[in-house]
Image (spheres, rainbow, N blue to C red):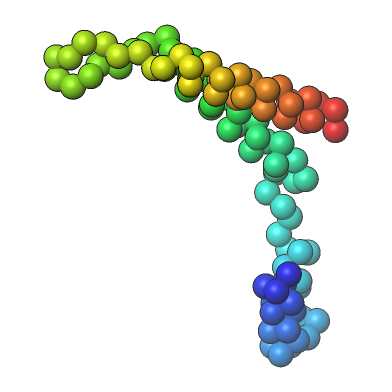
Length: 95
């Protein structure tokens, strides 16, 4: 709010009504659905990243043996990502 007030104050100093307000010139990125899109992206990334970590183990050092992601950590994080993605999709489709 402080920035918007400062912009209005400077606009008055520079010429009053000749400068448009910030809200009138720049619509919000992705409209009112910005937060559901961000939750969908983060949830899907969490789900896919943890599923990939479980499916394809990484190599430990040079020539080392394959190391799997700890299932006690990867499964709950993948489920949190799934819930977040489903919740965001439901929010976007309902509204």
